[in-house]
Image 1: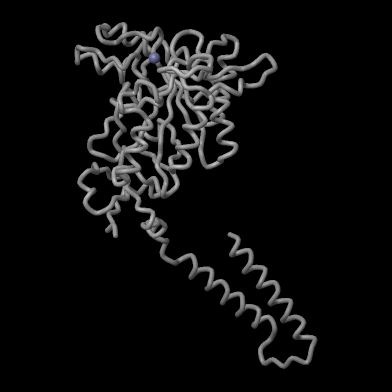
Image 2 (image 1 turned 180 degrees about the horizontal axis):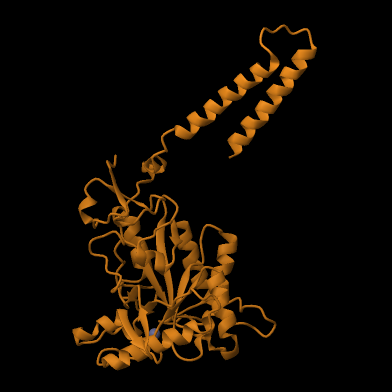
Length: 362
Ligand SMILES: [Zn+2]
């Protein structure tokens, strides 16, 4: 568009030049109109040539020296509370800020759980996606003070503030909510939900009553899941916003495998639901969404803590990936191409919508 505008401007300038020539002593055999027509024709040809040029292969934009590896692992971090005293399930505001800074410095960049679950990795090339989650929806995750500001020590304020200082670190985080008063302030539920969505964060399901699903009947499972989805969605202004991710309370699944289907699909009061991601409690990094072994119905998480993590906490894995960079997901910056070094391609599942790009790692 801009190029065309410049060319048209040039035509105008050339024409002005020709008209001046007419009044000067400039000798010419052809009438001015004809010269103008030829110039226009030439420029038009140029425009056509430009349009006909082969589109640039998007693979050429992938910088292989950054060693992209989209078969690598992705960590889904699990937090619970932010509080003044560090505990097994509580991070202090200072430690949470430290976590974000270390992730940032080590080249991790948050993506939404939805994008991870659906394999839409838009992370800039050379960086590693990470998924941040919080369970239970306690007030310390998101609190409005009486003066209308967000408590600066709540998780949401820390995430938003960190993003302001580091704009390439999105606050993308999913909050898994249980009970009737998510985030502990009944009158502000809607305000909070809309704030989260506007700021690129998400609302997830953590069941109506934080139920143990081990022995639950199919009716109870659908009530615990479906009722909570309807309840949470009722506070969201955007009509098309869906609460369709769930973190299993206590990480529990029905013992009876015939009931497992209700974690994903079911209905409550004749309103059906479908979850696109089902999260466990866990102790290992998730597979790449392009890996054969990836299962969006069973996504493991890593405890984002330093206390009682049994050597499988976030800091253990950060160290692990520092020592084993070949196992870490490194984005190619293109969500439609899956780039892997030679030798890793057998890990990738076949998917007609994505092109697999294999390269030789020097
Ligand atoms: Zn929980």
